[in-house]
Image 1 (tube, rainbow, N blue to C red):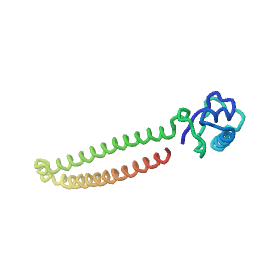
Image 2: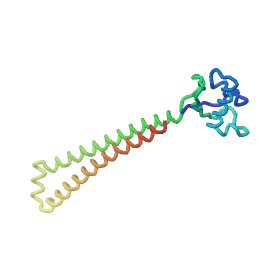
Image 3: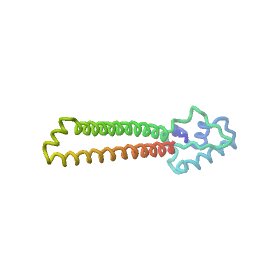
Length: 165
């Protein structure tokens, strides 16, 4: 979708002349009709004023002047949002990786010789250590599932943003 804005055009014929190349009287009528169909607000009183955003229709037989079309703000915004979503996803993924590494370190700590000896020496510590090991395993499973979900969500966000542009 290409867009432009109304400049100082006093009527739709002048707008069509600025936007389209080599207009004949018949092709000018076609251009005006296509502009009105794509932008019905232009037909209303005050609709044709400087700064109004105009959608440029693809119309067979009419050639847009390349210099008169602006950047597509929807496409630009969608691209920016996609980059931000990817960066955020990478940040979340790094956080999940860090959490997984912390779990590994905690599990390794439980298996250290000195800690294992201290657990054996205190009867209540054995149950506590088993509960801790189970909690760490549950967290690892949850983080793995969260990472898969994150990947799927980010792919859907990218797909949705691609559909906008």
